[in-house]
Image (tube, rainbow over all chains, first blue to last red):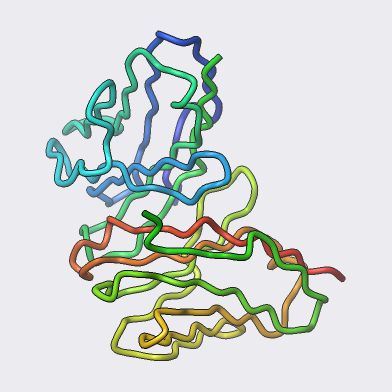
Length: 114
Length: 114
């Protein structure tokens, strides 16, 4: 009974490159949430998705960031033209039936921008 | 604006004694509060929660207290064990049915010494 799987665990990118972070929710879970943790800070909500739908993207930066959760396959958080300020730990969480359920978090992807 | 604050970045406690972790919030509309525990290189794991209509919730060694008039909650761990050493985050939800959108504090690193 695998938990929330995120890959890669560590991702190094140079400024201007693209970063793609993947998240496979727990089996039976169809709701995915992305959070970002900057150094010395708490986790901050970015986006909430259901299969093929973005439900709430109020925490997403207006530019360069996008997220999807296709019918088949993992959820993807995509950061275009990365900058040093994007360096952070990105956590994905999932729940079975959405907003009233407990969230289960993955181990995160540590993005480092050189 | 930091709506959820954990003012103590760290706490050191002797094994067997009580650990008290504190959290303050500013938004009186929050209606659900949660505590998460995080080990290094892992994602947060749910620990305990409390609804705003209650003032106490207990689960084994863990008890959460909510003081709505003071906008303050605390997590008590009794007795503390070395395995409890981790970073503890408190989080709040604005309306229970928006469960995925958690607002986290900065975290408190607990160290339990044998």
